[in-house]
Structures are given as C-alpha cells and as structure tokens.
Length: 419
DNA sequence: AGCACA
Image 1 (cartoon, rainbow, N blue to C red):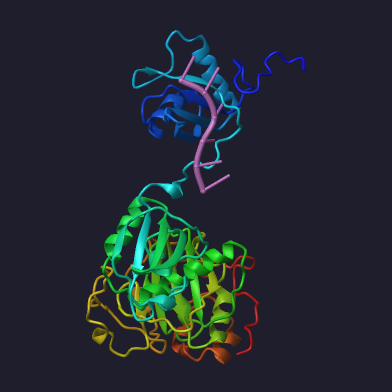
Image 2: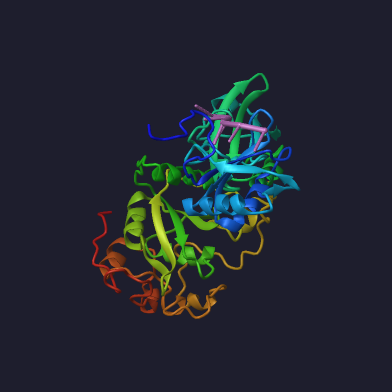
C-alpha cells in the first residue's frame, strides 16, 4: 500500500473515470443542465440527476475518459468554478466507471399507458392479443411495473412497443404498455381511448411481434400463405398497386395490408395457399423493387392465414371482394380515411397488359424501374406451370432484370417449391 | 459539499 490516499470513501484524488460525480447542485437539477455543463468538454453519453438524500448530486458520463479528464482539469485550474444556475457545483471523478440504470429513451415519463380492456373475452386476452376485441378507457399514464417481452399488437401500430405487462384487477383486465416516448404513447392514447379495436388493426400489427421475437432469437417462422414484407431503403413510393403488381406475379393476391413499423413500410400479402407464398418469398427475398438498390424487400412468413381487411383504402385492400365500394362504409376508429377513391380495382385475374403506364406513383425514372419492370422476374416454367393467374398477354411486357437480382442480375435459376 | 437504482 504505497498509496497515500487509501481512505476507503473519499479522497481528494480519485482515479480517473469517464463518470464524474457532481455535488452541491441546485434543487432538482435537470439532465439538460448537466449536459450543458459537460458538453464543452466532450460527448455526454449519460447522466443521472437528483441523486442522494438531498437530490442535489448527479453524475455525468462522457463518451471518453479524456473528456472527463478535460473537464476536471479545466475546473481544477479555472478561476470560475463550474456552475449550474449560478450555483457552484463541485465535481470529481466518480468511483464508478459507468452510470448504470439511468433513464434510457424508453423510460421517459409519460411513455407508458395503463390500459383497461373490457369485452366478453377480456380475461382471455393474452399478450398476443390476437383475440382482443375491446380496449376501453386508457385510464392514465403510469409507470411500468413488470416488464415482459411480449408486445401488444394493437399498440404497435403507433410505434415500437418496448414492454407490456398484463394483469387483472377488480377494474378488469389491465395492461401497461410502454412506448419509446410520451408522444407515441399519447398518440396511441388519443387514437384508442374508448375505442373498439378493429380486428384488422390487431392483425396488421401482430407480425411486428413476430418480427421482434425473431430478432430476440426466438425463431419460429412456420410457412404461411401470408407474407410479411419489409421495405428497406424506400426512396420511391411503394403503393398498394405496386405491391399488388409485384406479388401477383406469383399467384393471385387476395389481400394486402400496408402499415408503418417504426417509420418503415411493411405490408402483409396474402395468397390463397402456402406454396404460392413460398415461391414468392424465395423469388423476392432481398430483391429490390426498383433498380439501384431502392425499395429492397425483406420477406418473412406471417402467422396469419387470413387477413381481415376492414377498410379498403390506399393502405389495405381485399382483392377478393368484387365491389370494394360496398366494403365497410363505416369510418375506421383509427382515423384511416374511409374507403372511396378506388381508382381501379385489381384482382389476380385482371392483369391487364400495359398497366404499368397507369402507375399512379411512378418514381422519378428509376433506372429499369417499373416501366420495364412491371412484373418481377420469374422463370418461364414457373409462369406456365405454376402461375395460371397471369394472362399470357402480359408476358411480353416482362423484362428480365427489372428487379435487381443479386447474384445473377437476371432470372434466378431457382426452382419453385413443388406446388 | 463527498457516490445512485432495479
């Protein structure tokens, strides 16, 4: 112990740490003030304020040790002490190397909704909420008690759902739903409070759960006739019609539902059978709708087998319904615009040649864009043997390589799974 | 004015 200062608790010379301990802070000092204080010396990656019995201590963690050293060094020789709101604050290296358990972006006040669910099957509503019928009375904002990994689908429509816990009280079946921020929670609250949740909303959101589970390492993705498509690098608008066109090349598309997931576009595409979906997934996975790497498709199997499209609009459509104008005249509770404006109706058998010129949202000249790429590349044998849904008349319109085919740039030599 | 919370 050559060390002079081996007093257990406090010593004047702490070993350096990228975490600084601050004391004598003004009452209820805010994180913003801490960041302001530390910013001149480096990147403040974390803070913790209102620490200690008097709540007048705090921690600042810099990205780099040198930044913390810079701050300590500066104030060690500065004539002006560090100040917050004119109050001198004392700082030194913390005896810890990192701030633990500080608020993350997922713990901002007001980002958790307390939900009370009522309905005939309310107490049967498990977290997958596939059978969630009613959500009524999002009572208040609260704090999360027991985090669980599952995500409640209805709420995923409004943003990433970090955690959900469910429990039963005398008030009924309840849940705490944690979003990334208060804004998302508020928008969910405004949209859902007192409303009956349409099954459709549950269903379009539920794959997000599946997706998230996948990321978590829980694989399970049994084949399905419904594909979940995520579109990456969406430089150009991908419309319902575009998706319908792309996916119709492999068989009749029964239904499509588009929705946002964390700002990215996703869609569910329903085929009548699993085999068609498999073929489409194999053919399209990783490929780009537009040349140049734009609108790259990522496909997975949904757990759904039959989407319930309540509203036909520019985001969702049931192509199996002959006259969409008659579908669901009632407005959606989530503020989706009511039906109307079905410029044209497609179904799998109405694949009109030359319709690529009708593309309402033709991107600004994507190289080898839809003009030459109305139909995804597909082996002829597949067209003839497995895909009776595209009339031969549309064949001449097909151009190989409309979509970037990684590896070959042309028609992939894959053999479709036996149908 | 001297080191936290889940």
